[in-house]
Image 1: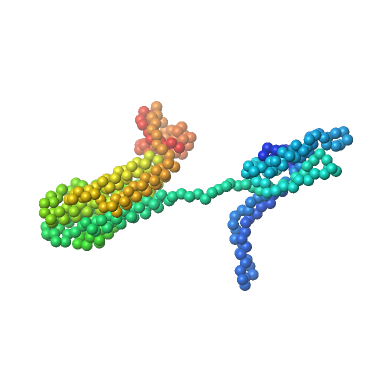
Image 2: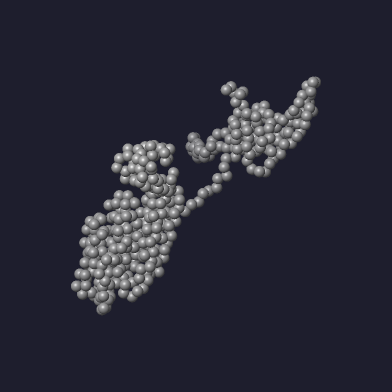
Length: 398
């Protein structure tokens, strides 16, 4: 097409007009910094300048008489264009003869008419690109909030353990039993990261140091797991640490002290495991909404169990500080995984009628054969050329 054939009928807010000449001005927004005793300035680029469009437009009478004079009511067209230019309805659509459709605002116009040139009204109009009325977006960093709540729970659990654990005045036989209980409670952790009981047992008479050693030992799970989703599963195996240990009959003062210390050991391992699992959930990238929400539910159940726990000797509930930190962590994890999960695809189940190659199945489901590997991995298909028919398959929505 020639340039003449590509020209469009000019209009603004659907009011047509003719264009005699049009121009565009633009550039960059610069802040020029000039410094004392320096000959060369520095021009700081602040982004593209708003484009403005200068249009020399006119509207005229619709017919011309035999003597060359224009007849018809050009004033109606003039008034319609004035009304469009002065409208307070915000930006409007300009159909530019050379540039096409643009969203613009009117910076100003000038109208001229003359008796010498009757039947025509000329406009000099300056439009400026409207852009978007973008407002600053605010959003809560839910991941960082989970990390902060996890740290707070670990701190509260450490302080609670330090106030409950004590071997002072206990007979050596009962201290030895607590050391055995330490080995038994940390057995699951030992299977994950190696022997950790030795350094912890060395601090058995210093509760604060012992608590720090326990937290450090649990932190080693992250290095062994190498990725957050696997770490969550490892920490989950510690949520019930110590629950299978034999009960201690609190028949004497020494036995009550032993029972309280044993329970304090179980609680710190469980609470720190819950806190670290929550931390890993904030660091994890979930492939689907279903998996994110499943982790959320499992963590919520584990936190609820900690909030409902009672002292085995006196039947007292958890301390207010620990309870509040558990509650805050639960809310943070729920908000984080619910919010991030909402942006992920969900899982659905399909049943194919016949054995089908994964490439063909991916094309049929997604319109994208390159996603065949996703189907194979998600469903543990033995051979990508033979996805068995008549069996349930998990696929993603989207």
